[in-house]
Image (cartoon, rainbow, N blue to C red):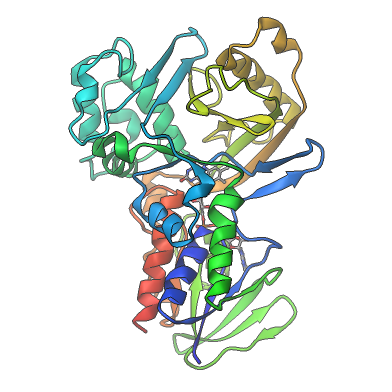
Length: 421
Ligand SMILES: Cc1cc2nc3c(=O)[nH]c(=O)nc-3n(C[C@H](O)[C@H](O)[C@H](O)COP(=O)(O)OP(=O)(O)OC[C@H]3O[C@@H](n4cnc5c(N)ncnc54)[C@H](O)[C@@H]3O)c2cc1C
């Protein structure tokens, strides 16, 4: 039987494999690492004595492809999903705290209620923000609306987190799609989906179990080193030390990072500039009755980090668009953000001098830089490099920034294409 070789067991490869196996295709997944998940995974940290995620991931209920993936893998129970969308904020400079509470339906009643919106913002600012959803040129986020309170206290932090790129360079149209698919669809599309345990337990292991139950073969520690191309078709694959059996009608989905795809398919144009994300995990049992209590996270404004998450036995902080900090030492990075954590958690001032054990995870090429120049380099699903191959990954031309939603959509699109071959 013809095989589909999926290279890469990140979310895009897993999503592609789910679609293919649901359509009765025979699938082999080749993953270079010892586990699946790629940039979205959990592991046990011996020093901290805790299972941690490589990085905090915020997924919203409006991410429709991700929700379908969770349904298909039966992983709904692996998430804590609040019945209403509430986003607590803390300005770490001024100490101000507020919560954004979008109403559930599509019509944004909440922006008329000062108690539900960002304090001291004007109604007209919200219409300005809604206009971003219609931008389709190369306007940057920084130039997309008036830089008033709403900009600094809402738009800037969430845009940096969504694009993983500074607002001076980040493309407003990529951020606009996120606003259109979540905030503008009302609170029901903005409920945060937080894994009860880790990312792997919620998003990766259930997909692997589903794929195995459908007969897919998953090969770990199996790096694809070379694709032989003749007359515009892949005719053979090589692993690091061995040839991989490849039939004349076999097809390939490359669900690897862009630099790997460009190495396997010479001449492929793909993003070549990236942004780092730093995650700092502090050993600390946050008080469930404290400021993070109900939501389980808080958005930080005017500090170095953007998000603080409450986890089992630790609190975890994310710094996005972090190329300028990535070469600092782990201790320097942790020391910079710990005071913000103390303020956000409402701990006594003295806690600032007692930083707990920590782990800094540096994802140096966390996502492509969401700039106009890089967005132009994103290829579609099909590639003129090989007629029997398709591309998947958050860096392909999904119209979205590099996100879980984009990765899953790209995998589904690649599978749809391969099913036509
Ligand atoms: C720290 C961090 C925080 C993030 N936060 C968020 C967030 O809050 N919300 C959100 O939506 N998204 C977030 N993202 C983005 C999200 O994680 C990615 O969009 C998604 O995981 C990408 O999946 P992918 O399949 O496209 O790529 P990857 O996860 O990179 O998967 C590629 C896979 O290919 C494998 N591979 C590479 N080379 C080979 C080879 N030669 N042969 C075989 N296998 C190979 C790799 O090992 C990997 O498993 C974050 C990312 C990071 C790093």
